[in-house]
Length: 48
Image (cartoon, helix red, strand yellow):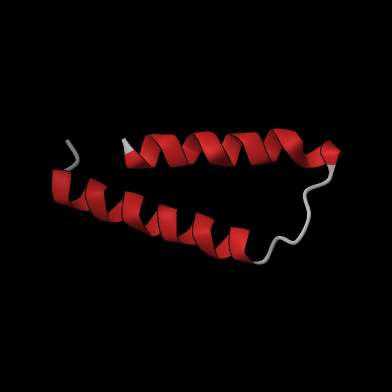
């Protein structure tokens, strides 16, 4: 079983990676909207 502390750290690291990626995005093309939607849903999971 994964310890809650390790899981919390992994989720914080993943959230930071998502934020760094989004900082570099200037425009989202309609063809990539599925990936953007997936990323936003991931935020919901990490923040929950």
